[in-house]
Image (cartoon, rainbow, N blue to C red; front, side, top):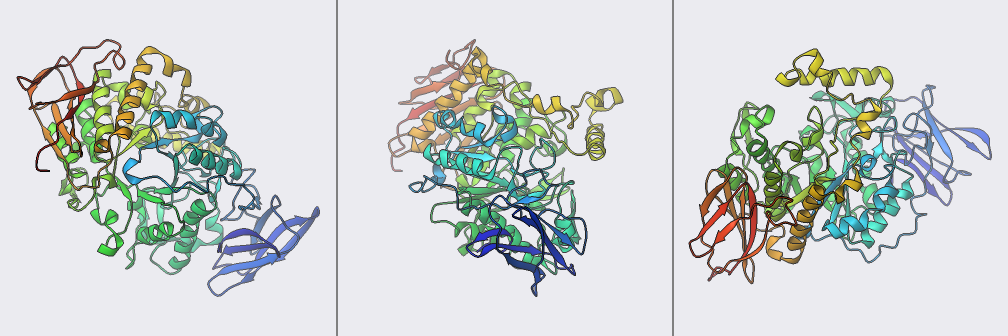
Length: 612
């Protein structure tokens, strides 16, 4: 049963608000056009409740704490006028679902496609995303990950400045528009994962502070200020509030799972980790298979070990080492966390063979050890990418990997990603090597927006290319309309020759991944991957009827020796359908030699190894 928010019942609308320090809490609304004030009753735990007859879905309401200015419900299901306006009562049972036969997605077959609703397609609404579902299905996507959709201030936002955690943003549509998107996704055999942010609230429009100051604690701090209170007095209700939020996406919206943002910032010294408690609740919330992923750079194997073995029970964790090694090797980045990587094929082989690279080694960037032993972690529990919203948007100009590396290198990197034994993530538009950047953008009130823009430029002044005032001014202003508009995908360009080649490669690789169990995410805890030289890597994926061999060269031209007895070429990245100016690989099985005229990759089918 929902405890927080406004819930329509046969007797009227039941309200629940946590305001532990309040002396009085008054509900303000209207019945038959007449203003109504109703004082709610305080329970022992600081929860104020009441059932008000005469109200129904569509009515607006707000709360006054101790006679203060009326504020929206912290658990509002919809904010039709934005986070500062009054809340709207929503009936979550009114939508007519058609997905009763949908049972969820097979974890071995998950191919994640991360997208930002506002910049993905059309006018940036849930309905616009729904219009592209057939395209995504045909591409080979099995799950879309929606960047945070919780209500935010203004007309646009990255999504990580959420103000009302239960309310889908009015900029994207109404709650039933999101339900429609998910219902249609299930009809297209696509799961929907929702990105949720529990480690902080946005700097504008988040009124939880007004109702429950103890929602946060000064005992711990995060990059965004005081931490969410998960282990001090009052933390039980904070946990319940966040867990109810997680469950409402599963129950009220039929979401197939959650991606938990920055779980390292959910600081918790209690005996039961909050993330573990939330994960267990989500797993038990539906009869279908639901998945919980975490964005967490710590490489903690406990997070994805089963609860019965003392772990947290998550279904997957972002394993950033793959991205960082590839970026260091292909684009040459050395600052920040890239200083921990040499960008060698040996590092890449180690990462692919066990899930992540750092297993407890000293990190120069952190000035501390990082990681844990992944020897008991199924490789499918590691989510990898060659770009995502963070790795692009946290760059000064929002440039993507394919904007800064040669197209041949890009094709080789993509081949590794989509044939790896981990769970691959594609960031929207990468499949056609989109020209649009993905910049950081906001629409805060002017004074706050100016501070954010200046802070971002000050942050990048430490980089030599932005050290001068003039150079810093070239960093896109996150408050500017053109920064947001420039981040929108141009769907027409996917038909242009160079873009169409990249799209064809993604489609072909995902077709092979879907058709061949040997190329899907692996439940094994290790994989055969080795460096053939300082530019070429080989990955062998075992199969019941034959193995798949991936050869990828990420730098320059060269020849490598590799046993290819009985090999059949499935595809190479230098075929005309993938490369506008192909430089074919020369594969000589008799002499066990493969010659690359430039960076590239080959996918080969091999006879199964006897005795397996």
